[in-house]
Length: 291
Length: 284
Image 1 (tube, each protein chain N blue to C red):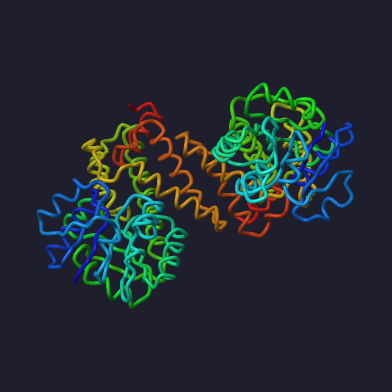
Image 2: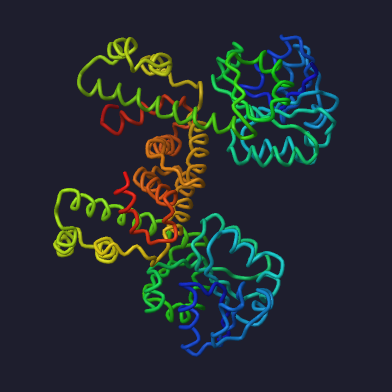
């Protein structure tokens, strides 16, 4: 399939590489031209604009930072919308608010472009290993068009529902992972303050109902005090803000998410934003005099 | 002085009347003309026309977008107000929005103060509002005689936006206090103790506060008819949390109280008084 790919950051670059490995013809565009170089060396074609990346292709994928960036590459002056053609499907794999995804999808629909919101979970490791979880929202027909591309980038690919449903799922994912990381950090702080070896606690818990991938992976990194991202805490804060704003708009009571979001807010405010989200452990320790 | 007024709601109407009664020539523009029908005022067809006729304009309307539209939109104030004239915005909006609107007006030589108020409808009627002003001190001095018709405590907080930051702080403290009173009233009731007696006893001690006094009384009487509609506090909490995240300042209590307000909205009490936070607890 001929695929355009927009946004070649930590996530986008390995995802686009996996599309090339899967035998697809990939045209790339990135804001900084130098970030296209590794892809061109792997056989990608360079585009001069997001519209160029979409022109003549059946699929165009974006992986950028925030809703205004998605809107710009999809609907801006040089955006995908300028390359509108019958059958073109646009896929955004960034994490943005469900309401923003619905609005961008509606505007693309006016130009006859089918839109899928398909955010991912699994981080840089999952992007490189092509084991991402992909949660998609959009029509069944558009999802079928995109499915071969999804299969090259991820393992657990689920068509959740209509436009926006993918972002709702991702927000739910960030609730679970945000509180999950905080829960593991609190359990470790609790163990240490009680004079108990937290690595032994982790080992014991892994065999029971508290088992989770976060306890296993993030827990190990906490023990190693390896705060290198991974997933930066300012990005987790951004995602939790999407959760809290959506809850505010809907009239939805989320006390645990609210408390967690403030811990991440404190991390960003105190200079831990570039650390992995497991640095919430550092914040907890300093609050309880365990530094 | 010729004074314009936009936003003749629960707060704005008594404020406008105070200015008229103090001898100022009152000019108004109202989205719904009938809301200004009985006021002793000169009526205008657009904000621009109002702005052209006066030296100072007061606005007190609901949301950031409304203030921006009235000030900067088509037929907005900026199309009529003369250089050197002053917009005093008493609405509660985002500090960033206040700064942005002030900057756009400054391009045309129009001054702006963000001057949100606290004290509720009763404070507006009694002319005892607390007024927290952001903007140039010299501009504030020019309108101080007008503000003294509306409130008792007028504090210059800092440059544009600073008044809105102070108002955000005010809302954080007040709604958290309402939640605290609601929890105390709920605990008393659940423990089989008369909430009215508890409130009366507490009013004489260290927990005494205006919120315990006024909102506590409403809870005891189960009088949930608005004073200030809870949906407005819900709106303000959205602004507070957004400002906190932009500043990287953790506000854990505010965040949890905001969730109680979300539950209040979900249960359909947005147009009732914020004392309804008691009813949220009772539904948990």
